[in-house]
Length: 408
Image (cartoon, rainbow, N blue to C red; front, side, top):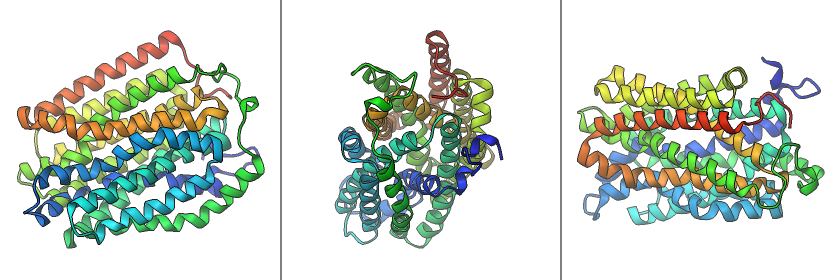
């Protein structure tokens, strides 16, 4: 294990109670959306008399993101004002209850309402969890944690999606019960709450060297990073929201095929994320963004070539590998630009922007798919990602950014 995974006392991050709790809490992000993807065709078939069942069913995946878009900025302000851990625990409890409710609710409209409530929980969880990471970890340990967090999200996603694929084969309602597992995290978060109470909340005096110091200078960078996150996620979200229907349209098993495809995506992403600290330190932030976007683009180009299992699995794996580099780089950049007393607000904006991409994706790209076809949209996504990678890398090189290996 690399030395950056150790605290000053030599204790590895993955053995620290607070780190374990925050890593597990981060996995709820992927559980929120992609877990029910294998069940979408079955859910649509369960409501043949519901008007616009096809559109409503597709939107179930992205519905939590709509709530996050509306709630996350407010959640970020609350996190800065009232503390991180208590709101994090409230979000986890709401997540479990609203997520599991979909297994019992009678119709698509009520299930959609529960998914919107789930988004409120996700907004609380993601802003509070990310702010706690900024509070509790610094410098190389923060970079190491981000790599571990991305790996945990991807590996857990592999487990969640595989389990959901099996349950969806039994009943399209059963995958909703996976959300109840979040209740197991509440006891693990109690030590984090006590640790935050001992440390106290950050103030203006706690702003790290290099963070933006003037009162409102954090807003512009936060909005810019958020815009980048929106575009990235809108393209990435083609995988969980459209892959089941792409497979069905090509005569393949949508439920099982989605589990395999997203499983390849998350498993490969988890392996690459374990190497994120070494890759980002060796290449620098700008080249890490360029590599990540390029690999993502190669994945979508592979999907556009042929609707055969070899191309589908290879394309999904490449998309997952590239996103595993871009995602932690975005969060690190946001934490670098966030003053200590504004971490909740900055991460609320970035969280809103990232989840806005999930809302935009099915609304903007489904009509394009219907008019131009999957292959054309996948190839267009590859081109856009390559342009984004070159642009972001050039901008960071031109303006300069603090190296990932440096201390705050």
